[in-house]
Image 1: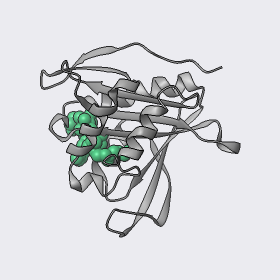
Image 2: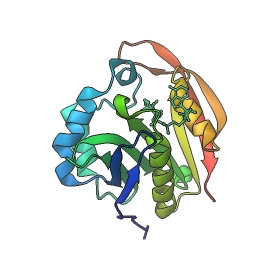
Image 3: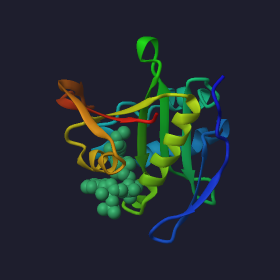
Length: 181
Ligand SMILES: CC(C)(COP(=O)(O)OP(=O)(O)OC[C@H]1O[C@@H](n2cnc3c(N)ncnc32)[C@H](O)[C@@H]1OP(=O)(O)O)[C@@H](O)C(=O)NCCC(=O)NCCS
């Protein structure tokens, strides 16, 4: 049985804005859809999951209580989502490994929210009982790489032309990892 961290944590960002980091809930569906709609096109073409697709949003929200998946959001006082992060335990011989995703609304970036969410998703990963977390980032996503490097992740591999963006262009995929325990 894995541990579930349900606590909501209010935080004040470097720019003075306040948000609460808490688990994704079923009634976040509409807010998560709006969050996906406002993500910059530059980011959307590089994301693994299309957060503008209602099917994907439904899949994420329906998995909010899934055993091997933890999803957290950063919400404003009015309930709008400004950050999303998830860790999902892999299967088979990698069942001790969790795969992380992280994204922050563009107007909330460079204020420490990504770092706070990354810390919270690490805790969730520990609760899931995984020993290692990985993040898969396209080589062109320099901001994403910088934040995980600062958090102690190191590059474990590069898969050549392994991912394609929404325009069909192929990109090198960087796998970064951190050993939780
Ligand atoms: C990556 C991302 C989550 C960072 O969120 P954030 O809230 O801006 O992160 P922080 O404010 O905590 O930044 C932490 C550090 O990461 C580094 N960093 C963040 N964005 C950066 C950028 N665009 N370029 C260079 N370094 C960057 C900086 O060192 C920064 O510290 P500083 O602001 O004190 O210099 C956000 O840019 C994002 O959602 N990007 C699109 C999705 C993505 O690439 N996700 C990662 C792969 S799943």
